[in-house]
Image (cartoon, rainbow, N blue to C red; front, side, top):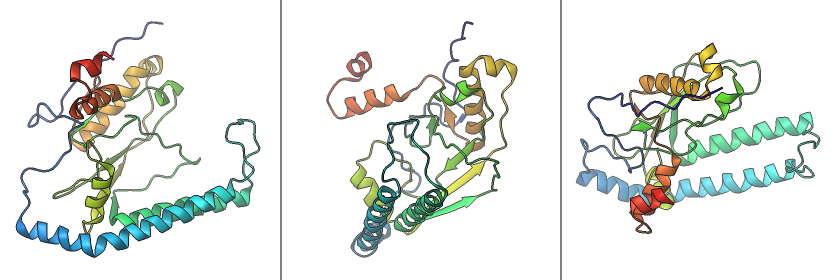
Length: 252
């Protein structure tokens, strides 16, 4: 069977014909004011130390608990015995504890339009395989779509006035500091209906991935590309760091 090549890059947002998914994104229509600078300074001295302490405590305790609960389990052995029912329940609690603690530390407020009920525990996959700034979606990897099983797309959107939760081309320390010095960081979770592939999509994982990506981009009202990949991001980062020119980075 011959797999058809992927389509050319397509842009959904006509008002932004050339979005760059790898540039640190900040809304230009809301410039910083003196009041905003004063607020960031105040929260850096008061809110930031408290949230950083909460995050450190939650990270250490959850990692310690997970290490204890998985003691004796060989992660490199696919035939190893699964965790006992009691351990699984405790691990679910640890996951909930880590997630709730992270939301508290970063001041994340999650707003969702609906809940999705599934028969089995979900396998969560981020098909882009990397982070972007939310302006444009990059090419979906096809691994999960080669399973030929239905998927339930979930869109994540980060409404913001000055600084976005999306992490791109920003040092991790700066990103953590900016998030922890905002009073609230909003996240919109938009679950879509289950997507069942057609016969054409079952025969072509690229077509399956591209159609799911297009549907999600329309819901999120952002651009999407079926040709931009993680390799372009690595090349872009090498070029802005001055390690290589962009052409040299792409030619590696």
